[in-house]
Length: 163
Image 1 (spheres, rainbow, N blue to C red):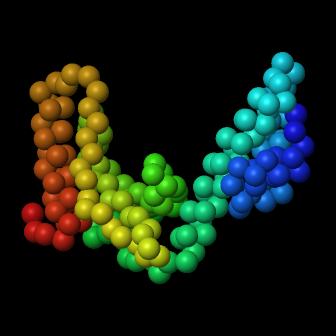
Image 2: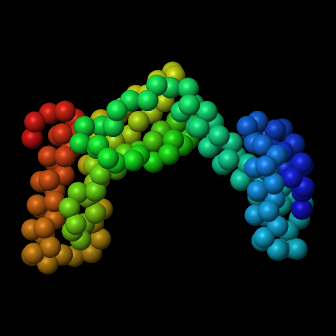
């Protein structure tokens, strides 16, 4: 298994230049907890690089977030904390605001995504997210419809238009 120093050196060679020795030691400790003597050194290093990339991306997102001026929460999201800034596909740095609507068999939420672009926060238009599993009774269907109406009102509020 590679040492913490070897993990840092490999991470830097792979371009993960924000990884600290302390973070590499954390990766080493997680690998050490796996107790699998059958892995080759290359496999251990590959597993370490997966952790290093994840930590590096998180570090980059935190650095980017510390350099931008914060903006107010989306309309109707006061008192709701967003997810942490994170790097997502295509190296975009985003955070998500989520507001659950109603308490029904379907999961309904309004979601707003902020993105850091060119050193400032850009807020994307809100989305209505609906997750439905299974079949519903008539009363559950009425509850879902009521929640959908409330969600559309919340979506309109987040967009700044009257509902």
